[in-house]
Image (cartoon, rainbow, N blue to C red):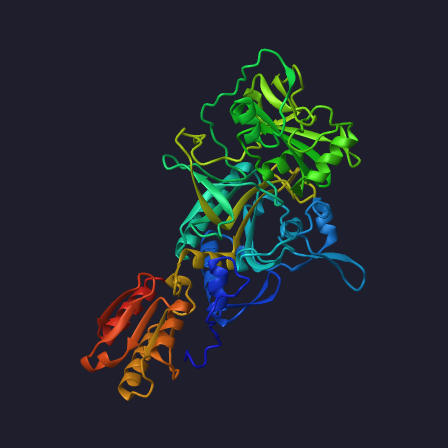
Length: 581
């Protein structure tokens, strides 16, 4: 490919609306252009990258025994009603009607469709196990698209679904897919960590995410991990053992005391001269429009996904100060935020108030708690004495770095991660309600035992940029780079430079190297900047040194530069590309 013919327009500045490095680099280097919020055009360079990621995924999925198909992007409401997800999936599901007024949706995922396919085609235990996958565009109507390709509304994804006759078979395929994913991401040049995760809207009993570990702001989740064992989990699934703390108050009897101007935990601790670990903190949430009180030890924080799962909700937000005041007034209290507690709060906005407690409150004795009176708190309180322990007591706590590993007891570390893949043990979540069954060895009908396995193709490409870049541009891993090398003649008017550059270019192409020759009549600095910005893994520059038989050879990943012969330069690139196959 000649650079003069390549459809690419690099920019001098980063786009003003870009927050993370992959978004900035991909727009500036001419890979993507925004069409509308969360939707991007994939320009020729980006499409080449995506196709290479897809190729790697296909090769490893095929090796793992999966079979590729393609399912419709538009899905009928009826199948989603069969699974029970039409009403509960949330606003991320883009719903629409056709000219016959039939309700449909744009597929954010394909569990219902693949289950219907299996229901029609897998009738006997003899036909299983089976793993079917596709690579296709998806659409989720994100409330706040951001981070470019990392959290867009339209995206390309590989999703696979396995069908087995037993939990044992599912676990075997789950491990098979985990190994395939490890190979895929390694080939894409990504260092990933397989972490325990929340199943979210997909459902299922067990799930893991493959996270690219990054120090950039693009990391969407904290990943907690242990250096001494293999424990790792993202923030909405992580658990830990807590260090010892003073959880017993010094009061000998329960009473309500004055605590003026103590709206925060810190102010209350200072006023009463206690530690936050002796306080039961009450937080007010609105979950699916319903009021929920969450109780937790005063020095700990609520992990909202855990709370959402505890009450079986879909959408969650913290209540506003106005809503808290109104809730107190409706239940006969004249108070304000900062003094709220669970006692006496029965209903709000037409709904009964649900109270959920984190496990940390069970260890507290003679603790401090809000009593719904301004400038007052209860001290010396205990559960099952002054107040009843809520029916729902579960893990709601956000883990913090330094807390202890639940497996080996060593301190946990935390880093940021970008999710590029996930695997789920669905069990019979979809097959049972959709009556997707087969005949077992005894002639009885049984629902399929299913697994689900996703890889974000476009996310993987963007994550590679987050992991491989410098101030000058992208450093693509060789396996997914749009082109392997660029040959730059410093002066297109110099016949010798042009001849040598063209000879190198032809040699590279002859040996299967995807190369670009920069034949533009531009200043050398412009060519070099574009080469670094676009991220060609190898750069061969033919300049005045050719009079002495040498060219400048640059490795983009390491920025190492050397002067070698044209033959040596070509051989290095050809060997590197050959080793990919």
